[in-house]
Image (cartoon, rainbow, N blue to C red; front, side, top):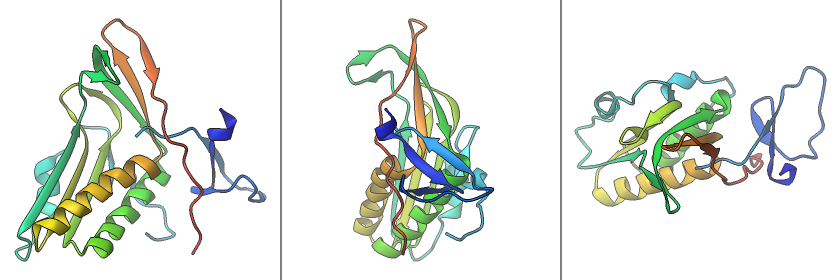
Length: 187
């Protein structure tokens, strides 16, 4: 298991060979399941209450945008052939997750030339049928909006330190095996 653990030093994912220093904050992060140098307010990207699609849509208004894509990732009642999922509890490393999501929004704006991009993920217990993540992209044309939204959700699932604990109708629960986080490339 330790070979799949990522190391975060002062809220940045680094190589295991990175030297430590006095007063450093070190976090060991298990594989995930699914800016600026200043810490971001995580509540813009992470919410412990139901996601408000209307509010995010309002943030993405732009009269130049003819294409709007809204992706809602909802908790379903099955996973990998197992039925009886009743809820998922999402846990995150707030500072790193907020920074990753903020930087991902900026990357989508730049890379796909979308006009607006908003991403928000739930934390805490989310019941079947409720949204766990929203990705909204508005662009001048539909292709950019679709491509930006797909890239955002696919990248979020690989790079964001968010973990899933599935709850089942028989009273059992388990953490989902995820993707190991990779050290961030330094520019």
